[in-house]
Image 1: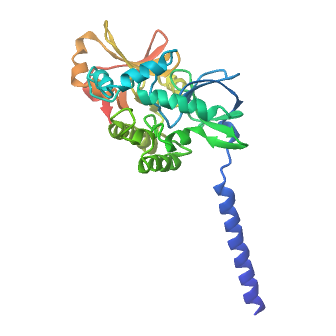
Image 2 (image 1 turned 135 degrees about the vertical axis):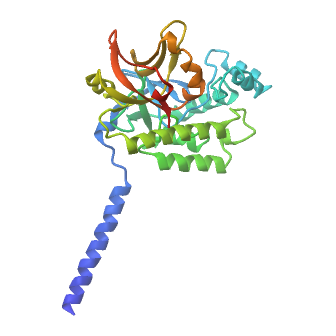
Image 3 (image 1 turned 90 degrees about the vertical axis):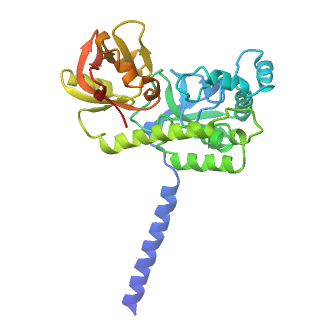
Length: 336
């Protein structure tokens, strides 16, 4: 009987330990390497653009992409004017894009989102700025890629998630799923959809093609996941989004490599034609097409594939301090 009681006691202690472990693990503990610091907001530029006192670089908020808005002193009047015939203005701009992918432009709802952001942050005492992971801290424009943990009434609120939950932005995973809050973003978006909030309310004058955008962004996010699962550990594969990859790649000059990234710009005003991949501010990688191979531009359907992540393979060379691969064949550039 004593042995049985002892076993039951040990079992109860184990169960209690597991319950305590679950509670502890359920509370998020933020890695100090992910915290950039605590700052105060100096300016709300629009729904997803803020300036902070003392921060040494601008920010790009992860997981959200609010609509654009007029920002001058007549912003309210201009927003009202385009609202009278919305979404005609959007479709006029959309028609000018050759490949048919969704565009960004000033919208009535963009102004409404800006107004909400200013109101939401007016009682914020401080903001803890956090990164998603340690593999990529800045984008190609020199902006910190961050979440904003805003302190309101003594508690921290994830502004990025609130934007999605209240319908002021979709879950924006065009540059990859959130490493820390993917599940929460999905749930927040479903909540906003179900309750017809913000962009999910057909009465609001916002972009009319969010379903199309989400299909496009999800495909890009899945491309990143596929690369990370299949090739992240291969020495001659390079993900141009990640910090340090360009420097690591410089050790492979003269060797065959495979590059994973997106074309940010096509420079075709003179020869050679350059398909430019932006790494970070003032640092780029080029795929080079010489005049005799100009037909590759049409063969590759560049206008479409530049909207997705691609694999570029070939011999790595250097020209004027910039790393590059010369494109001679269509097979060198692959869309996952």
